[in-house]
Amino acid sequence: MLFVEDDPVIRKATGDYLARNGFEVVLAEDGDRGLEAWRETEPVLALLDVMLPGIDGVALCRAIRAESQIPVILLSARSDPIDVVQGLEAGADDYVTKPFEPAVLAARLRAALRRAGTAEEERQGTVEVGALVIDRDGHEVSRDGEPLQLTPTEYRLLVEFVDNDGVALDRATLLDRVWGYGWAGDTRLVDVHVQRLRAKIEVDPSAPELVQTVRGVGYKLVRPSEAP
Image 1: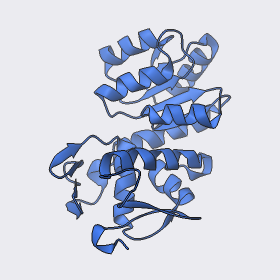
Image 2: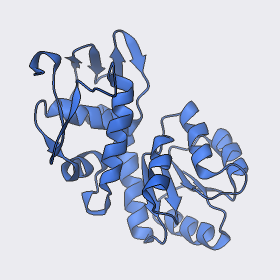
Image 3: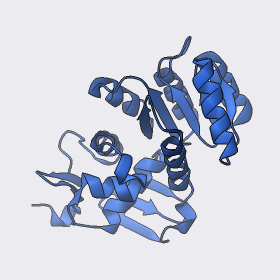
């Protein structure tokens, strides 16, 4: 995994902790070196501080996301909703606010890796939902024959909706099933990722027909034939 953090104390202490707990860690101290390390080592996961010298963490996340769908988690000392949403909209799968407990961070990193590696464990076959085709064997989604580039989290979120066709799922349930740590998650994760998913699978994301909001509860998948 790649860990980009400009604070030398946090970088060393956290890097050492993760290494002791089974992670193979590549360290970088700023965004430019982080981008170089990303391209040289091709890590399976990236943990990026937001406030980095040079390329900041959000821009680095965008650069990685343009080339890969690996899990990306942001670290930030700021928890303002605007900062959080900007990070998630850049393509991050999750964010962790500072200060953090190393054990909690490690658990969230493992959860992100599990999400990215469960394609072969999920039920197989092909599912059609309107113009969408979800190929579980190939871990691919297309709309009207055109492939869609979903992140692992977006794919898992879509599969969760498909597996619970017509059932209203609250945000806590989605955090638990998709992110794997409802006990330490934030409902903003769900809302932003639903928005990102809609932007890719809906004909008109501003008037979603497939993943619909259930007021006071959460979201549910509605097949076109079942729409009111």
